[in-house]
Image (tube, rainbow, N blue to C red; front, side, top):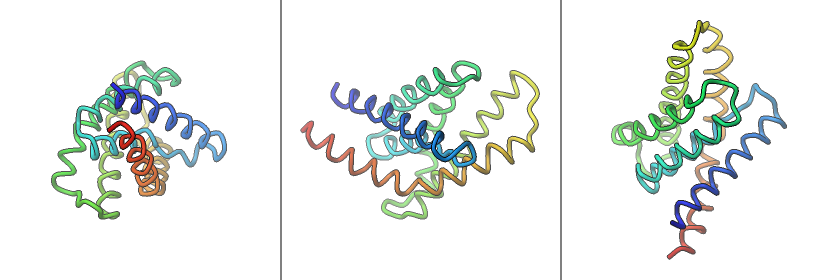
Length: 164
């Protein structure tokens, strides 16, 4: 139960950091910190806790998003499920480049799921999605990925060590 409460706390803090970063820097540099958090919990605690993180992050983002309800929950859950499969073939523990490759692949999947779901609701210009959504999100997420995962690792090791 304490782990679940700590995961919810991490989701809330990460959402606040993402919101503050968006307001300070602007819409051109918007790293997907919640996706990095989902990847971190899948890698460190397993798929169950990663799914819990994905549901919490998706619900929180959906509640503050103007898009259709449930898109972020579905997208984060798919990313939480696909991370172990990508990790099996691409991820080497302790390697920063393989961690970036994992984040890159999961971020591509996330944007692809969003594109597919938004195409179900209406017309979408794919070039605009590529230019204004895919490139800024993937590049900014990759820029902050290694640092964010290290910060999450330090905070989680302190928090979860106090539970034992």
